[in-house]
Image 1: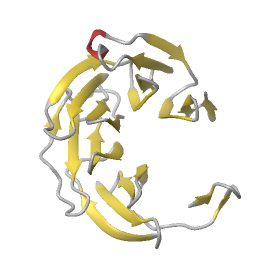
Image 2: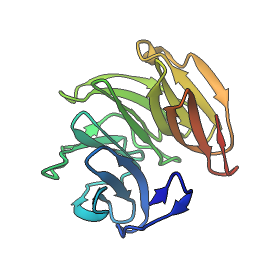
Image 3: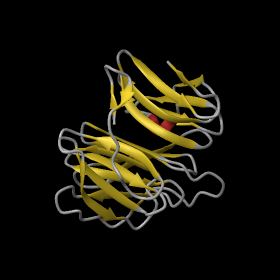
Image 4: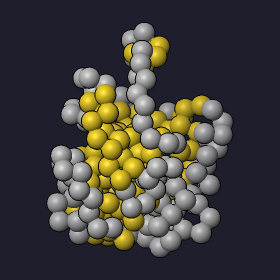
Amino acid sequence: IIDADANRVVGTVQVGIQPGPIAADDGAVWVGNLEDRSLTRIDPETREVVDNIPLPATPHAIAVGDGAVWVVNGRLGKLYRVEPELGAVSDPIQLADRAVSFTGGGVAVDDGSVWAVFGDSTLARVNSRTLEELGAGVAGGGASAVTVGYDSVWVANSVEASVHRFNPLTFQDGAVDELPVGRAPTGIAAGENAVWITNREDDYVTR
């Protein structure tokens, strides 16, 4: 836990083995544990673990929105919906083929849609209420993260060291822009009038 004003660590929370993706809303902080194949729920007020939910597959990416926690397994091409209060995990939603060389993935939620990217370069859109697939497009090599902002869908491609920008209405036709970034981009977020990308192998953030 980092104090953003003081820029220092003010606490720690014990979670599962090899914690990876993390997401938060007003009621909880969620951590995906890669080795345990589980989802840890933390109370942000007490800073204590209140639940640990087993998952059927490794959580390569997680997001919170539209009343659920969304989990992506990038290798298997599957999306899961987790009910926060009950801890119930949906049947897998198959959105992509099994990836051969890259196992990462990403997920984001925006205005009734869940956007997910997978290791085989699939970009998929799902209705967050009905779980109906609303279409699929092609991202770059090693699609590793996705975010929505500024009327666009943004996908970080780890193998290509690039970010693709998609129009949400025409994403099935391909990207409308490609931007070079650092090596192995693995995280992406939109806010503060910019899109931010973390480049794992270069140890810097691209704006």
